[in-house]
Amino acid sequence: MNNKGQLICLWSAPLVGVLFLIGFSFFPGLAPVVSPTWSAEQVAEYFQNNTATIRGSMILCNVIGISVIPLFMVIVSQMLQIVNSSRALAYSYMGAAIAGATMFALADLGWLIAAYRPERNPELILLLNDFAWMCFIVPVGFVIAQNACLAIAILLDKSKNPVFPTWVAYFNIIAAGLMVPGAFATLYKTGPLAWDGAFAFYLRLGTYGVYILVMFLVSLNIAKRSVSQDSAELEQGRFQYE
Image (cartoon, rainbow, N blue to C red):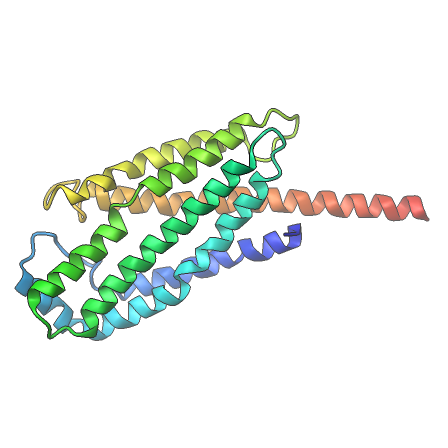
């Protein structure tokens, strides 16, 4: 991937972010968040009363769900530029990012399947809804692995002009730690660790949103710096040739 290609991939992130906000703004399950304490009949009624909006919002999220991958692949490409690191860390980061996108796709499909036949047995609707929320909130292992690989790669970079600023390593570690409470949503139906709770839902998703924004700005700065260096080298080469 050349540096201009990185910029193209990076600038797809804001567009994807806007589309995600549109998709989830129409998803009635977030305003307010569907409670894990609801009975099967309540959940079934929710899907029956909101079938069209659930389908529409989830179809949009399904279409654009994988579109966050270009941002992560730019980060992988930049990790491969770290001389003192290992390619294994970059490839592990890539694998973890893909796993995260897969879990989001499973959550999206869970809600879509529940809305596909909202007249089915309420217990089955409840099961699909539980499955979707668990896929959406609980998996944090891939986030920990992803952020840890990037943090280690950055800390191994002892060059005079490191690819990533050192603070990005510590930011990744802190961000991963803040998303850990989501893993406990499988144990609770009420309180801050339930899937609609302050820690498991709001802290986890808020942290992830900030993470995407910060890493976009960091990667954009690195890509722009590389483009400027390439342009300067080309100009110097042209000047020497003349």
